Structures are given as structure tokens and as C-alpha cells.
Image (cartoon, rainbow, N blue to C red; front, side, top):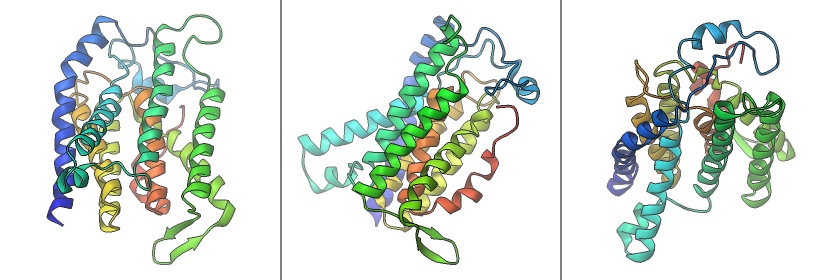
Length: 293
């Protein structure tokens, strides 16, 4: 038990300090290359006016760098790689125990986090430097939805066919087998989570909410004895807290799509790995989509 606690909280603390170490270099790069939007958005991704969004973000989108989410997923990836290598090069009970990468619990959420974050990174770059009719302003709403649906479909297939999971836990009811309906539920949940990314761009809001959500699922995973998954949530939360340290007013940078897309898709995977997507209705309530995205 003591080693499990050390694993979760020790790795999350290590990630926090590692991300803090990376921050000066990332900040220098983002400001040197002016990685922010050149004009504030006045239209929603669907084509209509985004009045609420514009009022919330008009003074923040221009002059404050995007892509701060790189700090989170890159730190998580580095920590996972470090302790995987340690377990391979210096095999022992301790190093193998501290290594939190496992096929049944953490390979899928880590892969989802990194791959979705890289897709979001491309979108951020297009929003900042994109020119021309089809790429200026980043990926369209349709393209983003298609990408999320694709990621969700791959994840749902992996759960259903590879991990042979098709049930969820309903609070006060118990485990409920959905059969093939597990697949569309997974995809819709991932899409719903992504739709709430409007909170990015408000100082401290996205970091605070994401840290709370991953911490909550880390607790659920720990008490379900999914220690590797709990450690993964702790590591992500550690990276988010380092981001939040520099995102509180006045924000040094914002997550951008590379943070929002990676974290929302990874959180969906974590929710289904714990068989507790229904708990998202409570945990993710502050993350509910606002009009005008």
C-alpha cells in the first residue's frame, strides 16, 4: 500500500517539478516566435456569431501564446519514458513497480493523449500561421469533429475487441453490460468532452478544471486497485498543475488545441477504463460547453 501511494503521489510530484523545469524554455520559444492568434475570433466554428466567446476571449487571444498544452503532454510522455527505461535497464521490484506503463491500464490513455495532442498541435500552428482559404484559422468544425470521431472509433474498438470491455458502472445500480452499444456511447462521450474546450483562454480556468477531473479519476482508479491508471492520472495532474502555475492571472500562455484535444480524449479513455463514464456527469459538470464555441 505504501509503495502504491508513493507511486501515485511521487510520480505526480516528479512530473510537476519536471514540467516547471521545462517552462522557461517553452515560454521563451512561444514568445520568440509569437505563437498567438493575430486577431480574436468573432465567429463560432459553426459559422455563426460567437458573441459570448468573443467577449470572454477578445483581450486574451491576441498577445498571449497558445500551445501551452505542450508542457503537459510532453512532461507526461517524458516521465513515462524515464521510468520505463529504468525498469528495463535496472530491473528490480521497485523500478518495475514504479513503472506505470501497462497494456491493460495505461498504454491506451497515453497513446490517446500524445496522438490527439499532436493533432491539436497541428491545428494550433494552422490557427497561428495558416494562410489561404482552407487552412487560415485552423481546422474547420467539420474536420475537428471527424478527427475526434476517428480517435473515438479507434478507442472504442480497442476497448470492445482487444480489452473485451462492454460494461459500465451506474452509481447505486451496479455494473451494466451495454453490448455493442458500448461503442457509440464511447464515441459520443468523447465528442461531448471535446465540445467543452471553450474554457481554454480564461486565466486559470482550464487548468483548474482539468486538474480536478484527472485527480478525481485518479482517486477512483486507486480505490479500484487500478494503480497504474491512478499513477497515470496523477502524472497528468502534476503536469496540469505546473501549467496552472503559469496560467493563473496574468496567464503566461494558454493550452490551445494541443492541450484541450489531448486531455479531453485521454480523460474519456480513463473514464471508461474505470467503467465510470456516468461519473463524468458530476466530475465534468463545470466543464459543460458554453454557447458560441
